[in-house]
Length: 314
Picture 1: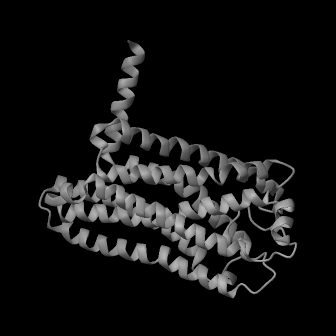
Picture 2: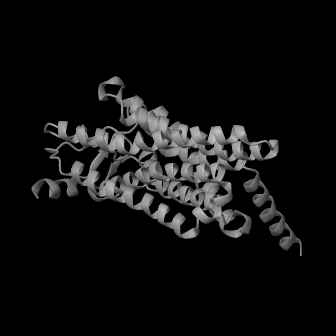
Picture 3: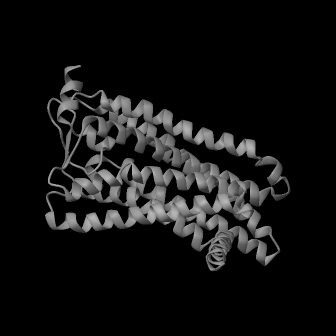
């Protein structure tokens, strides 16, 4: 109880990039730029998917969930990061750190499962097209989305709570710009072997099993695409699947590099830049990849904009 009360009074000092004052200004512009792009891009996908009846399909239902995840995930981190990068006090309260840890961990874990669900959707669409509407009915889509969100929430409640139980012994200088599990483990004044083992097991469950299932799905999808005789149908299948696969590679690539390699194999500064990439850049890339490589999304965007222009002219 004494440790918790002391922490709540002191909070944490987020060192971030304070060792490089000139770099801080560049990072501030970087974070602000990508945060605004994340908001605009992902909110556009959510609005378009809601307004356009042609996008009321399982694929865009899951894509809207992904966009909502990215907006919430980045919002849980970016504002505090921007304040600390420009303000003289680079601190976060203990409660703020706890909230940030729970929310970001829950949303990040949810995205791991949701990307696997989206691969399942693409597998059924390409390999079982005649039964797609029957199998991927609205009820099943809602259930799969709920499982994704609830699994992320469960992982956050267990893993974050386990991490926050570690005694800090007055050490509150967090060498990071966000409250993240690996950074918090470095503050502990006791042996963290068990915590690191738990982190490794959780990372395997969320960062290795879903990508393995995705690769298996795309193995079957590749076989099915090669059997399609229509060039147009083959191109459409490749377009939608390649967008999802690109997002999967970028997301899992950075996260796996961060969480599954030995702690002493990269410097703390490297860890900060990797975190900066997957927390700020990856959520921005998702809408760009899906809108630029997706014909339906581009048509929906043109339709909404044309209607808006017509209403303004009249």
